[in-house]
Length: 336
Image (cartoon, rainbow, N blue to C red; front, side, top):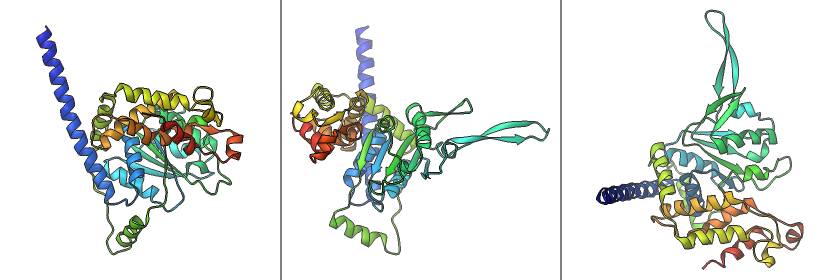
C-alpha cells in the first residue's frame, strides 16, 4: 500500500516538474516575443504578464501615447487569445458590451428572440478609457469580471475561457469622467502605472517604428498553454516566510491594524482579496522570472501595484503631501 502511494506521489511530482519546465519555456518565449514589439517598458510588460498568468484583470494607467493599446494587442497575439477592443464613451450602453436580444421571423412566420453576442465574448477584452463610460455601463463589467458569465434578459451566457479584461485609464483630463467605484477597482488584480520610456528606449522606438518596415508580434503560446500555466501557478509551493510577509503587508495597510504612524494616513485599506491577489501574483512573477518558488523580493515588487487601488488616503494625508506609493514603500521596507 505504502509502495503504491510512494509511486503515485513520485509520478505526480515528476508530472508537475515536467509541466513546470514546459511552462517556464513558454513564458520565457512569450516575454521575448513581447520584447520585440514593446520597448523600454520592462516593468509594465512584466506586471501585465503576471496579471494574465495569475488569471486576473489589469488596470493600465497612463497618459496617451505610451503604447498601452499596442501592448494589449501584442499580448493577444503572443498568447494566442481572441482579443477585442471597446472604446468607452459616455454614450456607451451595457448592451453595446454584453450583447442584446433581437427578434427574428423564421420561414414559417414564427417570431423568436436570438441573442447577439457583444464584444465581451472574447478571451482578452481591452476596455479603453474605462472611466469615460457611465457607472451603469461600467457595472456591466462587474459580473463578467468576477463570475465569468453575463445575464441578458434573465438568460445566463458563459464567457470564453480564459477571460481577461485589460482596462486603460488616462490620469489626466478627469473632467467629464466617472471614477471607478471601489467594488469594481477591487476586481482588478493590479493597477499598472505606465510611465514614459527612458532615453535609450525612446531612441529605439524612434528608429524601429518610423522606418519602412514595422515589427509585428508572433504567437508564442496558445490559450490552452496559458490555462495550463494558470493551473500550475496555483500548484506552486509558497514558503512560510512569503505567506507571513503577504499577511504583514496587507494587514498593516489597514487603519487600526499596523503602525499608527503609517495607518493614521489611511482612510480605508485592502481586504482579503488583496492578500489572495498578492499570493497568486508572487507565484506568477517567479515563473515570469524563470523560478518555481516566490521570494520576499516578489512581495516587495508587487505590493504597490496590488494594494495601490485598494487603499485611500485621508484628506489630512493628502494635504500633507503623502502618497500611497510612499506609504506602501514604508510598509514593504519592514519585510525581512
